Length: 134
Image 1 (cartoon, rainbow, N blue to C red):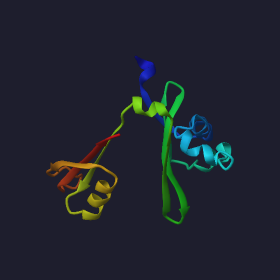
Image 2 (image 1 turned 60 degrees about the vertical axis):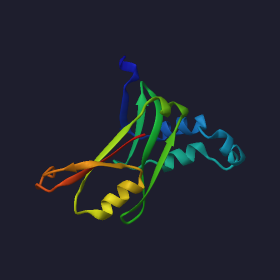
Image 3 (image 1 turned 180 degrees about the horizontal axis):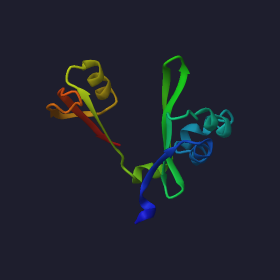
């Protein structure tokens, strides 16, 4: 069914306002409701080419991105509605065999090493495939 397809589009403040208004963790956030500015917080997450929304039909179910803080330093963020659990998302990344710091970072993010891909790199290097289903 075409309306159940997950589409990834650039993030907008309107997407964020909808997602934040759903209050996925509303019991946790209830105490802070006087401090949460849905309109301002959603607008603050906009970042060209670094923030995206997952839509099913026209309904935002999650958004994620990076917000540049200063120079080349960024913070990652994710917001979601309860509907996110109905649409699993798989993430996969190839990481050079000799790039140990990148492998540690992928593992820290919860990705699992699925094996060595010999000569997979565009430059002929061996790379590990890291993946996770969210």
